[in-house]
Length: 377
Ligand code: SF4
Image (cartoon, protein in one colour):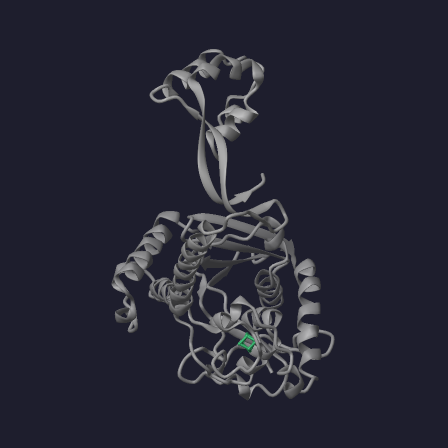
Protein backbone atom coordinates (compact mmCIF):
# COMPACT_ATOMS: atom_id res chain seq x y z
CA UNK A 1 0.00 0.00 0.00
CA UNK A 2 0.98 3.62 -0.35
CA UNK A 3 2.40 5.30 2.76
CA UNK A 4 3.39 8.86 3.59
CA UNK A 5 3.82 10.91 6.76
CA UNK A 6 0.14 11.94 6.56
CA UNK A 7 -0.98 8.31 6.34
CA UNK A 8 1.21 7.38 9.31
CA UNK A 9 -0.24 10.26 11.34
CA UNK A 10 -3.77 9.25 10.31
CA UNK A 11 -2.96 5.65 11.33
CA UNK A 12 -1.94 6.86 14.80
CA UNK A 13 -5.26 8.69 15.24
CA UNK A 14 -7.48 6.00 13.73
CA UNK A 15 -6.21 2.96 11.76
CA UNK A 16 -9.59 2.55 10.06
CA UNK A 17 -9.43 6.07 8.66
CA UNK A 18 -5.85 5.59 7.46
CA UNK A 19 -6.47 2.28 5.70
CA UNK A 20 -9.50 3.68 3.91
CA UNK A 21 -7.41 6.62 2.71
CA UNK A 22 -4.72 4.23 1.48
CA UNK A 23 -7.33 2.14 -0.31
CA UNK A 24 -8.32 5.26 -2.26
CA UNK A 25 -11.74 5.77 -0.68
CA UNK A 26 -12.30 9.49 -1.28
CA UNK A 27 -15.02 10.18 1.28
CA UNK A 28 -15.93 13.76 2.20
CA UNK A 29 -13.24 16.47 2.07
CA UNK A 30 -12.66 18.65 5.15
CA UNK A 31 -12.26 22.30 4.19
CA UNK A 32 -10.18 23.37 7.21
CA UNK A 33 -6.93 23.15 5.21
CA UNK A 34 -8.11 25.56 2.49
CA UNK A 35 -5.98 28.52 3.57
CA UNK A 36 -2.87 26.40 4.09
CA UNK A 37 -3.29 24.67 0.71
CA UNK A 38 -3.64 28.03 -1.00
CA UNK A 39 -0.52 29.45 0.65
CA UNK A 40 1.47 26.35 -0.25
CA UNK A 41 0.27 26.47 -3.83
CA UNK A 42 1.18 30.14 -4.36
CA UNK A 43 4.63 29.81 -2.77
CA UNK A 44 5.39 26.57 -4.63
CA UNK A 45 4.34 27.94 -8.01
CA UNK A 46 6.23 31.21 -7.45
CA UNK A 47 9.44 29.40 -6.60
CA UNK A 48 9.06 27.04 -9.56
CA UNK A 49 8.73 30.02 -11.93
CA UNK A 50 12.18 31.32 -11.08
CA UNK A 51 12.13 35.09 -10.62
CA UNK A 52 8.34 35.34 -10.32
CA UNK A 53 6.74 37.44 -7.57
CA UNK A 54 4.23 36.03 -5.08
CA UNK A 55 1.47 38.38 -6.24
CA UNK A 56 1.88 37.22 -9.85
CA UNK A 57 0.67 33.72 -9.06
CA UNK A 58 -3.00 32.95 -8.58
CA UNK A 59 -4.73 29.67 -7.81
CA UNK A 60 -7.73 28.38 -9.74
CA UNK A 61 -9.49 27.72 -6.44
CA UNK A 62 -8.88 31.25 -5.03
CA UNK A 63 -12.55 32.19 -5.49
CA UNK A 64 -13.47 29.63 -2.84
CA UNK A 65 -11.77 31.68 -0.11
CA UNK A 66 -13.83 33.93 2.13
CA UNK A 67 -12.66 37.51 2.82
CA UNK A 68 -11.18 36.48 6.16
CA UNK A 69 -9.42 33.55 4.55
CA UNK A 70 -8.00 35.85 1.87
CA UNK A 71 -6.68 38.18 4.58
CA UNK A 72 -5.10 35.22 6.32
CA UNK A 73 -3.50 34.02 3.05
CA UNK A 74 -2.08 37.48 2.29
CA UNK A 75 -0.75 37.81 5.83
CA UNK A 76 1.16 34.54 5.54
CA UNK A 77 2.45 35.32 2.06
CA UNK A 78 3.84 38.66 3.19
CA UNK A 79 5.37 36.94 6.23
CA UNK A 80 7.00 34.46 3.86
CA UNK A 81 8.54 37.34 1.92
CA UNK A 82 9.72 39.15 5.05
CA UNK A 83 11.26 36.00 6.53
CA UNK A 84 13.76 35.81 3.66
CA UNK A 85 14.13 32.05 3.97
CA UNK A 86 17.31 30.99 2.23
CA UNK A 87 16.12 28.98 -0.77
CA UNK A 88 18.82 29.04 -3.47
CA UNK A 89 17.83 28.91 -7.16
CA UNK A 90 19.15 25.37 -7.48
CA UNK A 91 16.55 24.15 -4.94
CA UNK A 92 14.10 21.48 -6.01
CA UNK A 93 10.56 22.67 -5.34
CA UNK A 94 7.64 20.39 -4.45
CA UNK A 95 8.93 17.37 -6.34
CA UNK A 96 7.55 14.13 -4.94
CA UNK A 97 9.51 10.90 -4.76
CA UNK A 98 8.72 7.33 -3.87
CA UNK A 99 10.36 4.01 -3.26
CA UNK A 100 9.22 0.46 -2.66
CA UNK A 101 10.01 -0.52 0.93
CA UNK A 102 11.38 -3.98 1.67
CA UNK A 103 10.91 -6.10 4.75
CA UNK A 104 13.03 -4.60 7.53
CA UNK A 105 12.36 -1.06 6.30
CA UNK A 106 14.92 -0.64 3.52
CA UNK A 107 13.89 1.47 0.51
CA UNK A 108 14.76 -0.12 -2.85
CA UNK A 109 15.33 3.02 -4.93
CA UNK A 110 14.04 6.57 -4.72
CA UNK A 111 12.53 7.90 -7.95
CA UNK A 112 10.05 10.56 -9.04
CA UNK A 113 6.52 9.61 -8.02
CA UNK A 114 3.96 8.87 -10.76
CA UNK A 115 0.90 11.09 -11.23
CA UNK A 116 -1.45 8.69 -9.44
CA UNK A 117 0.48 9.34 -6.21
CA UNK A 118 -0.17 13.09 -6.47
CA UNK A 119 -3.23 14.61 -4.82
CA UNK A 120 -5.16 15.69 -7.89
CA UNK A 121 -7.32 14.33 -10.68
CA UNK A 122 -5.26 11.16 -11.09
CA UNK A 123 -4.84 10.48 -7.34
CA UNK A 124 -5.41 6.78 -6.72
CA UNK A 125 -3.37 5.24 -3.87
CA UNK A 126 -5.05 1.88 -4.40
CA UNK A 127 -2.69 1.33 -7.38
CA UNK A 128 0.23 0.66 -4.98
CA UNK A 129 0.68 -3.10 -5.03
CA UNK A 130 3.67 -3.22 -2.67
CA UNK A 131 4.65 -1.19 0.35
CA UNK A 132 5.61 2.20 -1.10
CA UNK A 133 6.71 5.36 0.72
CA UNK A 134 6.01 8.72 -0.93
CA UNK A 135 7.26 12.09 0.20
CA UNK A 136 7.25 15.62 -1.13
CA UNK A 137 9.51 18.27 0.39
CA UNK A 138 8.33 21.86 -0.06
CA UNK A 139 11.92 22.57 -1.11
CA UNK A 140 15.33 20.94 -0.77
CA UNK A 141 18.85 21.67 -1.93
CA UNK A 142 22.36 20.33 -1.54
CA UNK A 143 25.23 22.34 -0.12
CA UNK A 144 27.77 23.43 -2.78
CA UNK A 145 30.14 20.62 -1.81
CA UNK A 146 27.31 18.05 -1.86
CA UNK A 147 27.85 16.86 1.71
CA UNK A 148 24.74 18.32 3.31
CA UNK A 149 21.14 18.37 2.19
CA UNK A 150 18.66 20.97 3.46
CA UNK A 151 14.97 20.14 3.57
CA UNK A 152 12.71 23.18 3.93
CA UNK A 153 9.10 23.00 4.98
CA UNK A 154 6.76 25.95 5.51
CA UNK A 155 3.92 25.50 7.95
CA UNK A 156 0.65 27.37 8.02
CA UNK A 157 -0.89 25.89 11.19
CA UNK A 158 -1.24 27.64 14.54
CA UNK A 159 1.02 25.44 16.59
CA UNK A 160 4.79 25.12 16.62
CA UNK A 161 6.35 21.84 17.74
CA UNK A 162 8.39 21.74 20.93
CA UNK A 163 12.09 20.97 20.46
CA UNK A 164 11.48 17.42 21.71
CA UNK A 165 8.55 16.87 19.35
CA UNK A 166 10.64 18.21 16.53
CA UNK A 167 13.41 15.67 17.17
CA UNK A 168 10.88 12.83 16.86
CA UNK A 169 8.90 14.25 13.96
CA UNK A 170 7.92 11.57 11.42
CA UNK A 171 8.16 14.01 8.54
CA UNK A 172 11.64 15.30 9.43
CA UNK A 173 12.95 11.78 10.02
CA UNK A 174 11.62 10.15 6.86
CA UNK A 175 12.26 13.12 4.56
CA UNK A 176 15.83 13.61 5.72
CA UNK A 177 16.62 9.88 5.64
CA UNK A 178 15.26 9.57 2.08
CA UNK A 179 17.04 12.72 0.89
CA UNK A 180 20.36 11.46 2.30
CA UNK A 181 19.89 8.16 0.48
CA UNK A 182 18.86 9.90 -2.75
CA UNK A 183 21.60 12.50 -2.84
CA UNK A 184 24.42 10.72 -1.00
CA UNK A 185 24.68 13.62 1.48
CA UNK A 186 26.46 12.81 4.74
CA UNK A 187 24.20 15.09 6.77
CA UNK A 188 20.69 16.55 6.54
CA UNK A 189 18.97 19.50 8.16
CA UNK A 190 15.21 19.81 8.39
CA UNK A 191 13.93 23.37 8.68
CA UNK A 192 10.39 24.29 9.77
CA UNK A 193 9.23 27.79 8.97
CA UNK A 194 6.00 28.79 10.63
CA UNK A 195 4.45 31.47 8.42
CA UNK A 196 1.93 32.59 11.04
CA UNK A 197 4.44 33.27 13.79
CA UNK A 198 7.43 34.05 11.56
CA UNK A 199 9.40 31.50 13.47
CA UNK A 200 12.03 29.07 12.22
CA UNK A 201 13.20 25.84 13.86
CA UNK A 202 15.60 23.21 12.64
CA UNK A 203 17.17 19.89 13.46
CA UNK A 204 20.29 18.42 11.87
CA UNK A 205 21.67 14.88 12.04
CA UNK A 206 24.06 12.66 10.18
CA UNK A 207 22.77 10.48 7.38
CA UNK A 208 23.26 7.32 9.53
CA UNK A 209 21.22 8.81 12.37
CA UNK A 210 18.30 9.81 10.14
CA UNK A 211 18.25 6.42 8.42
CA UNK A 212 18.41 4.54 11.74
CA UNK A 213 15.34 6.48 12.90
CA UNK A 214 13.44 6.08 9.63
CA UNK A 215 13.93 2.35 9.10
CA UNK A 216 11.68 1.23 12.00
CA UNK A 217 8.90 3.48 10.66
CA UNK A 218 9.20 2.06 7.15
CA UNK A 219 9.50 -1.48 8.55
CA UNK A 220 6.27 -1.01 10.53
CA UNK A 221 4.49 0.15 7.35
CA UNK A 222 5.70 -3.03 5.59
CA UNK A 223 4.45 -5.17 8.48
CA UNK A 224 1.08 -3.41 8.64
CA UNK A 225 0.60 -4.13 4.94
CA UNK A 226 0.72 -7.83 5.76
CA UNK A 227 -2.52 -7.53 7.78
CA UNK A 228 -5.94 -7.84 6.18
CA UNK A 229 -7.49 -4.45 5.44
CA UNK A 230 -10.82 -5.80 6.67
CA UNK A 231 -9.22 -6.42 10.08
CA UNK A 232 -7.55 -2.99 10.18
CA UNK A 233 -10.91 -1.39 9.43
CA UNK A 234 -12.23 -2.85 12.66
CA UNK A 235 -9.67 -0.78 14.58
CA UNK A 236 -11.76 2.36 15.01
CA UNK A 237 -10.42 5.03 17.33
CA UNK A 238 -12.93 7.81 17.71
CA UNK A 239 -12.02 11.23 19.00
CA UNK A 240 -11.99 14.90 18.12
CA UNK A 241 -10.45 13.94 14.74
CA UNK A 242 -13.73 12.26 13.69
CA UNK A 243 -14.98 15.75 12.72
CA UNK A 244 -12.18 15.96 10.15
CA UNK A 245 -12.53 12.37 8.99
CA UNK A 246 -13.69 11.85 5.39
CA UNK A 247 -15.73 8.85 6.51
CA UNK A 248 -17.49 10.21 9.59
CA UNK A 249 -20.91 10.22 7.93
CA UNK A 250 -20.80 6.53 7.10
CA UNK A 251 -18.76 5.35 10.11
CA UNK A 252 -20.90 3.34 12.49
CA UNK A 253 -18.59 3.61 15.47
CA UNK A 254 -20.54 4.64 18.52
CA UNK A 255 -19.24 8.04 19.65
CA UNK A 256 -21.02 11.04 21.08
CA UNK A 257 -22.84 12.49 18.07
CA UNK A 258 -21.14 15.88 18.45
CA UNK A 259 -17.72 14.36 17.61
CA UNK A 260 -18.91 13.67 14.09
CA UNK A 261 -20.19 17.19 13.46
CA UNK A 262 -18.31 19.46 11.10
CA UNK A 263 -16.68 22.63 12.49
CA UNK A 264 -19.64 24.95 11.88
CA UNK A 265 -22.19 22.53 13.33
CA UNK A 266 -19.94 21.80 16.30
CA UNK A 267 -19.73 25.53 17.07
CA UNK A 268 -23.51 25.96 16.74
CA UNK A 269 -24.00 22.92 18.96
CA UNK A 270 -21.71 24.43 21.65
CA UNK A 271 -23.76 27.69 21.51
CA UNK A 272 -26.93 25.67 21.88
CA UNK A 273 -25.51 23.92 24.95
CA UNK A 274 -24.48 27.30 26.46
CA UNK A 275 -28.01 28.59 26.02
CA UNK A 276 -29.50 25.40 27.36
CA UNK A 277 -27.20 25.59 30.43
CA UNK A 278 -28.30 29.22 31.06
CA UNK A 279 -31.94 28.25 30.73
CA UNK A 280 -31.51 25.30 33.11
CA UNK A 281 -29.68 27.46 35.67
CA UNK A 282 -32.50 30.04 35.53
CA UNK A 283 -35.17 27.38 36.01
CA UNK A 284 -33.17 25.74 38.79
CA UNK A 285 -32.80 29.05 40.63
CA UNK A 286 -36.55 29.66 40.42
CA UNK A 287 -37.10 26.26 41.97
CA UNK A 288 -34.41 26.72 44.65
CA UNK A 289 -35.96 30.04 45.74
CA UNK A 290 -39.04 28.13 46.85
CA UNK A 291 -37.07 25.86 49.20
CA UNK A 292 -37.64 26.54 52.86
CA UNK A 293 -34.53 24.63 53.90
CA UNK A 294 -31.13 24.01 52.36
CA UNK A 295 -29.94 20.79 50.78
CA UNK A 296 -26.36 19.69 51.34
CA UNK A 297 -25.34 17.67 48.24
CA UNK A 298 -21.76 16.94 49.32
CA UNK A 299 -18.40 18.21 48.11
CA UNK A 300 -19.06 21.46 49.96
CA UNK A 301 -22.07 22.44 47.84
CA UNK A 302 -25.33 23.56 49.46
CA UNK A 303 -28.52 24.30 47.50
CA UNK A 304 -31.32 26.57 48.64
CA UNK A 305 -31.71 30.14 49.95
CA UNK A 306 -29.11 31.24 52.46
CA UNK A 307 -27.92 34.56 53.71
CA UNK A 308 -24.15 34.85 53.57
CA UNK A 309 -22.10 37.68 54.93
CA UNK A 310 -19.14 39.22 53.21
CA UNK A 311 -16.72 42.09 53.57
CA UNK A 312 -17.07 45.13 51.38
CA UNK A 313 -15.55 48.55 51.08
CA UNK A 314 -17.54 51.27 52.78
CA UNK A 315 -19.18 53.49 50.18
CA UNK A 316 -16.59 55.75 48.48
CA UNK A 317 -13.67 54.42 50.52
CA UNK A 318 -12.21 51.82 48.18
CA UNK A 319 -9.54 54.04 46.63
CA UNK A 320 -8.49 55.44 49.98
CA UNK A 321 -8.12 51.96 51.44
CA UNK A 322 -6.17 50.61 48.46
CA UNK A 323 -3.79 53.58 48.54
CA UNK A 324 -3.16 52.92 52.24
CA UNK A 325 -2.20 49.32 51.49
CA UNK A 326 0.24 50.55 48.84
CA UNK A 327 1.79 53.22 51.08
CA UNK A 328 2.31 50.81 53.96
CA UNK A 329 3.53 47.97 51.77
CA UNK A 330 6.58 46.36 53.43
CA UNK A 331 9.62 45.55 51.24
CA UNK A 332 9.70 41.85 52.16
CA UNK A 333 6.27 41.15 50.59
CA UNK A 334 5.71 40.59 46.90
CA UNK A 335 3.45 43.23 45.34
CA UNK A 336 2.21 40.80 42.68
CA UNK A 337 1.27 38.17 45.30
CA UNK A 338 -0.70 40.61 47.45
CA UNK A 339 -2.45 42.26 44.51
CA UNK A 340 -3.18 39.01 42.72
CA UNK A 341 -6.87 39.47 43.49
CA UNK A 342 -8.97 36.45 42.62
CA UNK A 343 -12.60 36.30 43.71
CA UNK A 344 -14.27 38.69 46.12
CA UNK A 345 -12.89 41.49 48.28
CA UNK A 346 -13.65 39.14 51.21
CA UNK A 347 -11.21 36.51 49.90
CA UNK A 348 -8.62 39.18 49.20
CA UNK A 349 -8.91 40.53 52.73
CA UNK A 350 -8.59 37.03 54.15
CA UNK A 351 -5.23 36.54 52.46
CA UNK A 352 -3.97 40.06 53.22
CA UNK A 353 -1.25 39.98 55.92
CA UNK A 354 -2.58 41.20 59.32
CA UNK A 355 0.02 43.98 59.39
CA UNK A 356 -1.67 45.53 56.35
CA UNK A 357 -5.26 44.63 57.03
CA UNK A 358 -5.49 46.31 60.39
CA UNK A 359 -4.80 49.66 58.69
CA UNK A 360 -7.77 49.41 56.38
CA UNK A 361 -10.34 47.84 58.71
CA UNK A 362 -11.89 51.25 59.17
CA UNK A 363 -12.76 51.34 55.44
CA UNK A 364 -14.42 47.92 55.44
CA UNK A 365 -17.88 46.89 56.57
CA UNK A 366 -19.91 43.72 56.62
CA UNK A 367 -22.61 43.16 54.00
CA UNK A 368 -25.00 40.31 53.38
CA UNK A 369 -26.67 38.76 50.37
CA UNK A 370 -28.84 35.85 49.52
CA UNK A 371 -27.35 32.90 47.66
CA UNK A 372 -29.04 29.88 46.16
CA UNK A 373 -25.92 27.81 45.48
CA UNK A 374 -23.12 27.98 48.00
CA UNK A 375 -19.76 26.35 47.34
CA UNK A 376 -17.14 26.05 50.04
CA UNK A 377 -13.74 27.30 48.91
S1 SF4 B 1 -15.29 8.66 12.08
FE1 SF4 B 1 -13.72 8.51 13.69
S2 SF4 B 1 -13.70 6.36 14.28
FE2 SF4 B 1 -14.76 6.48 12.30
S3 SF4 B 1 -13.16 6.13 10.80
FE3 SF4 B 1 -13.31 8.31 11.08
S4 SF4 B 1 -11.77 8.81 12.64
FE4 SF4 B 1 -12.13 6.60 12.73
